[in-house]
Amino acid sequence: MANTPADKKASGKETVFSGIKPTARPHLGNYLGMIKQAVALQESYQCIYGVVDLHAITKPQKPEELTQNTRDIVLDLLALGIDPERSILFVQSHVPAHSELAWIFNSITPISWLDRLGPYKEETAVNSQLNQVGILDYPVLMTADILLYKATCVPVGEDQLPHIDVANEIAKRFNHLFGKTFDPIKPLLTEAKRIMSLAEPKKKMSKSGDAGISLGDSADEIRKKIKRAVTDSGSEIRYSPGAKPAVSNLLTIYGELSGKPVADIEKMYAGKGYADFKNDLAQVVADYFADFRARRAELQNDRVYVSGVLADGAARAAAIADKTLKEVKAKMGFLM
Ligand code: TYM
Picture (cartoon, rainbow, N blue to C red):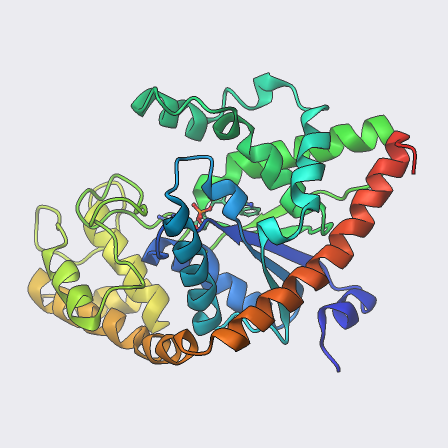
């Protein structure tokens, strides 16, 4: 079949890898920062996407919720347009090479590269109970995720940039110690690299709290949340993240989902108030995800198809990952 990942590799196309943690249904930030790009990149890259359950367990997870969240994210990604004919979609723990390469990379990663990272410092400052080694070590596992596939392009939101920096440092150190094996990794960011909370526009939209729009929300819930979203002082609909963080965030969402440039949207609402703007935005968001909701409802009943996609995805991912792991181990002198 033309256009399979193997064909793309053969034609010299770069490899894309990205992952999403199954800790809750994805929110609008996940969609605009990562998933939307991941879908578009399938056109011209070899794409490999992981539902990264080994990352999810770095914070306590109830077993039944981990299972359900993993199933949910797989359905969400398929319904949003990740196409198993064009990409490899798999669950991270189904490919044991991820854990093994992470362990190997642990042996060449100084702790000081990890304990200075913002996300680690912030998480442990907020909750001192979160002191598991996994929270510190998480960027090393991310490095393994990316390098197992020799991916050079990683679509992500802005919060992941420090982790990509660490991945590049680890790749460089490995190359230096054992010979050139990995190329530099480029993060791919969109205009929506940091979608903010609808309630506190100076904070990132995150999975926790109701200040985000979940892809599990109904059209009515979406409308209610957008109408409740905080706005800034002054009534002008103008993009200015410093002066008007709330409206700028809403304009970014409007632009990304309608395909209209933000400057055109500003003109459309010149002289109008927040109520008109929010009403229309609520409709844009609710409409945008209507097909997704229908497609997801169909897929939900097709367990056989979804299990088949994941078995096939794991086999195809493992074939690439095992080859890289073997190369790494041979270079390091493991008895083969
Ligand atoms: P996760 O599951 O927290 O988030 C998935 C993706 O969504 C992006 N994102 C956002 N983008 C814009 N605005 C926001 N408010 C927002 N919130 C989240 C994230 O940047 C991410 O791209 N460590 C990763 C998962 C991962 C990974 C990898 C990513 C594991 N291995 C290898 C890339 C490559 C994470 O926790 O993402």
